[in-house]
Image 1 (tube, rainbow, N blue to C red):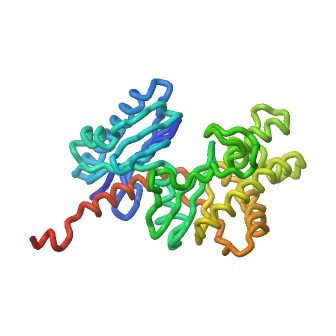
Image 2 (cartoon, rainbow, N blue to C red):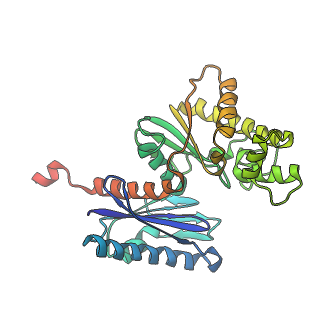
Image 3 (tube, helix red, strand yellow):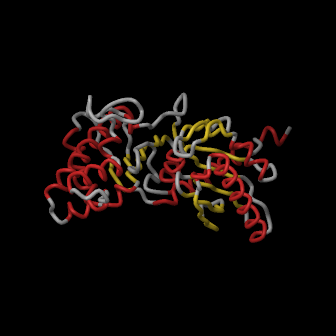
Length: 316
């Protein structure tokens, strides 16, 4: 069976798969990223993991993978196949495409940004399937975004498109690691809610999931923390939809696991804020933590499609 290798590299764990032409996950595997061993060791782990998948595909299906796709965090130069920078992995300017292609006996390799890659999967085969314009936002440790247009993800002129987490929603507010104050991700990410609820509850181990449960039980302190996050998120989303006019807003990540505890007040808060803008559908992500792997697989299949000779080339 024709297949591609897909890798989704995270700060703590890596997910990998063999993906069929129809997007089916034929084989899945996971392992620790091992960032405590340093960036060189992480890169070697990625290369070794990919080689194992190639061997598995050869043994199982009698043929090697046709291509590979890898999603990595941080700043990515997809055109040149370089993982430029990732603070949580400590690497700089890793020629990921060249290294993987060499380890995988020369097969073509595509590289992409983790959130945009996950957004590609959600847009094509997940919650955004059928939407010509969508915005995908995972609410996790931080907040990033993927702008979907006509089945593809817009990377921007310099690869920074979609960084909605750094829209300033509270001018002069909490300091952000990017150097600004009042950024959206300092108020509405899962980590921001965890910090706020730990302080409000007096439990240093409390997290966003605990806050959501407390909201459901009617705890007034939790309700206030949660509403503050929802209000900040709604402010950021209205700015985004004013600029982008998406048909669908897809919300994923840890905070979205709260279900309607998040979506019901969020839809109401966004609706209260829009004036002339068209209100998009606000829906939960559908693919969970498989989105990155599926998206990496789609990158690989797209790469093969782009390399297919045209009719004029064949006739020549």
